[in-house]
Image 1 (cartoon, rainbow, N blue to C red):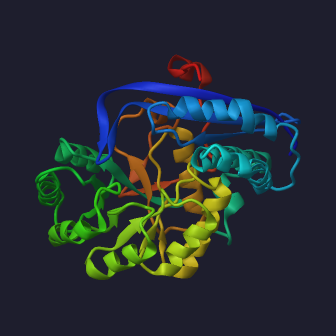
Image 2: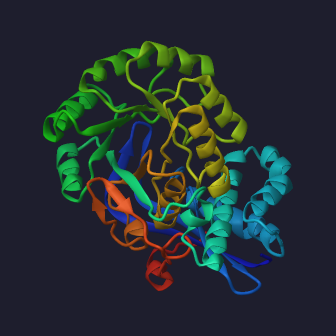
Image 3: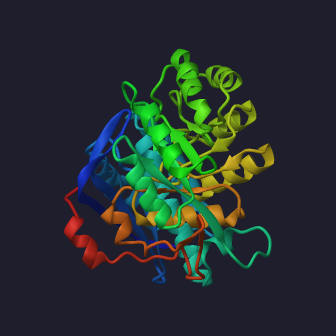
Length: 374
């Protein structure tokens, strides 16, 4: 799979209402799409995480155009994961020198996704079939509507339920009584048996997280995601898991197989949520998924970006069987909605097609109106 060309599209789409979380807001929806083309004309797509900071998309685009893309061109590997290994070795010291291991990991992750998409297209198989262990003939993936809050949470949830969703995730970590008010309203609107997750986006200190989670436990949340900072010591995470009655979830801000291994072996997580555009791509996150299965932790990959990453995430979860969930942002995002056909959700589940690769091909002419200079 000798790489002949790496192309990058830096995109920003306007939105009417900002997407808010406990640490900040997105006033538009960014995306960085990457296409790898091999010497024989085969191609594949990947997506870079770039939601934050405000100039994140432009920065990642420049990293690809100036460094990672040129390093990838001419590489000839027999396995899709070989490019990721090559790029990590080539850029490790530079990422340390400039203090940017995160952005480097994110751009490499997109190139890894593109290699897997290309390999599956070559094989004439949907990516999940290329990745699967066993002989399943159908790919069913449970999904949940995320990004609810802090405003109009009931209206959003009921709209998503009408579209077929049966699980919902509320953003918490906001001031005053916002969290409890929203949570009570959602539970009353959705009923006592609806799957309702919570995401604090690292909002609380360890000493306040126990009390905040305790206030919400009576509403029976399915999990509490990132109640404290991702880089808090494992001892703080373990203590929190022992004191609170709600299962803990995390992973989108863990980077490196060693840190994932430590988190899984620590026993404090019931759900692990790597993001294939933040670290590891398909190669790394599949390794985490298989490790999670052996550890008895449920693999629920994170996603809050454009359509290419969502398509790849669905394929990856499908390869590991029918368990877990995939996150689908409830907020409008043209860079998702104009790339991925509307999901056909039946009773909370999506059935993937047999289209080769990740199953989508972005309309570059349509995307042109969102393109910005990197």
